[in-house]
Length: 142
Image 1 (cartoon, rainbow, N blue to C red):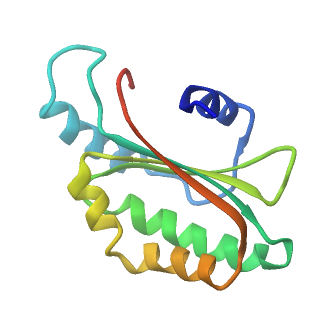
Image 2 (image 1 turned 135 degrees about the vertical axis):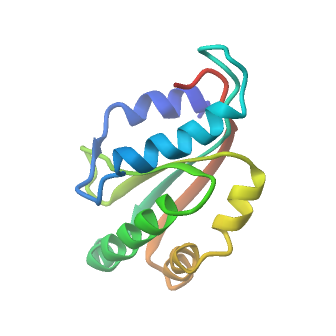
């Protein structure tokens, strides 16, 4: 599935009731990035990760607790511009994570965090039916 198609399909899902990103945090991260970028309104942006995960129905409560902590912790990381968790409308155990990082160093830092390790532990314990990650370079993002 092409990334454009996948991102378009994200428009068909609803945002779950996880802790929202504070406007101040979002603006701070974006401002740091924009200050280091060109003056163009549409400019090359950082690295995006899109994860599609299907969760075992009997593990949903555990998953929701873990992924909320992961999202909150990720949003507090330096270099994390965005970390959204979306839930499919047509399949309540299917989720999409939309992550945006300033650069590869920010992703490397993210992967060293305990909240990231909790996601890996959840997958290794058999909590997922499937999990597919796609990495993309932002081009014309706002």
